[in-house]
Length: 277
Length: 277
Image (cartoon, rainbow over all chains, first blue to last red; front, side):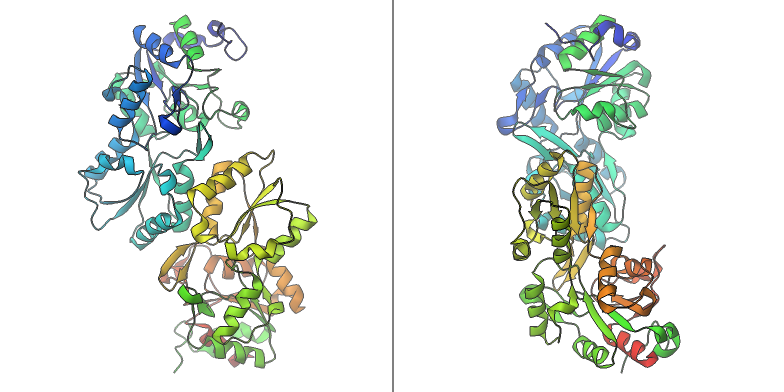
């Protein structure tokens, strides 16, 4: 038996879903919970993805994951049972590499070791900007200090952050995300970082372009109220928050961001979408 | 030969010094540069402190130092040649311990190992607040995450920060200060920290009370434009910035804070004060 959507029947509460032609899915906290051994699929999510894809809706995946290359990350998801192809997954590192090329920038990288192959073809000599990703344990005092010294030594400090998340949930509890260290370096150097990834409008637009859809034709489903739901809404999309992953009950009383729907999990979201489709 | 004050003769540029009865001195970056082996005295500063004290002015020391107990810290300065007594030094940890007692708070401590003895008599069981100091290398991802989990687990997250400095200068270069990690945890938990130490008005007022002076009768001398000079000015004191320690030429073009005088070092500050005294 499926739990009701926000305490109401799925069909009645989100009639706006009738106009939706495409679905963008956040991954961590929606499809799976990360953690030791790569994490585990959230109950019902593998089937939910399959049902959405089989329905004729255009489905894309949009993640701020920066602890792995996109290829390795998709491999991990496929091993869990998700039928996902690399070309349908949008993540910050490839988007940043394009920006670095276009603007001829040479980064000092403070990113996870497993993300490093994304930057294999990038010139990192005499850095003229700093890039941080979800480096997790690599966010040592020494490494942060090194990034800080590069940044403050530049005539015009330029900081890129791969996402701006506050924290995420792993199987053993909440963990600090890259946004926290972005704020740290922003304060240290009195600069504002350029965020690549959600909730950047450019990032969402790239996904919409790939889907050949207008914003009002797409819905974003995520566990992060600000970066998934709020970000998508600012682009003109609808946003649904799932009560899995980093969701906290207080999200439903947030002073400035309100999701277009709250559902217990991705399976419930798929029910609501397919009922209205 | 003494370098001129801000390019002008010391006596002519700061006539307001005539009304000053007391001097509050920042320590790191004004008296000495910290670093390996405890650091080293800045040229001319030992004599400058002596001259100020001998002149009949009331002299106090005000530091955001939290890598040592106040006792050990003063021992270090005395070993360098400074004639300073513990009772004339104001630092954040003893001020915080008073607050914790008054408000019956039990802290989770993320502070330097050498500061821990300040908290010997403080109950740290079942913490209901988090305290961060300049923990330096102890600001690992794991320790920050632990502090974050305590904070976000509280019904009303309460964070104390011993100072809010951005960075300081050691003999081997600039180092990130506690304020950077305060901003990190503030963002992670959507809270605003209570700052104990400079530039908190309460902290400056404690020093003024000890001197039995009104704010307009005292001048603060520091290397930190925002926390020393700006903080003192907001309390009604005058503030002089020295061009030692973490001073950067861009400080003299800061959009919102302007020191009442800029001098090359503490010796030049003493010259200016004693010329006008």
